[in-house]
Length: 124
Image (tube, rainbow, N blue to C red):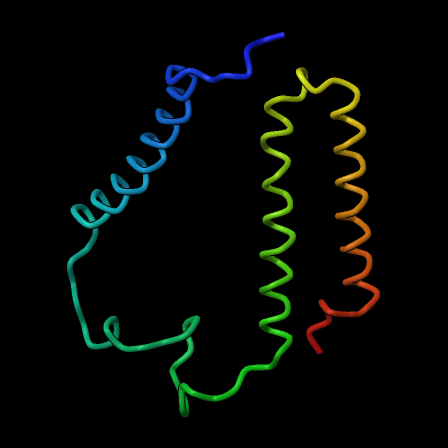
């Protein structure tokens, strides 16, 4: 069995991944700013939403369904993120880890079935 204490050298792959991710994001923004077109017209600077001209007041109320779907997406998206550490440590956790993930996925599936039965994802 390995030591429970982790050494600073164990975190090097995480820092490398973080540096690559941040570098890619910042590099992409800088490169597109440098090589992108610089033509500014009144049409390009005008406000629009999904290619549609803005009509009316921006402070109109939204349907609660919009926020409900957004919250459900975030909840299920965050749940799926928990699978990443499990996949990384799959061999170390063995059969018990597999059973635990099946329980986790089962609970996640039950939550999803509940949401569907309540028709929370129906947009109408």
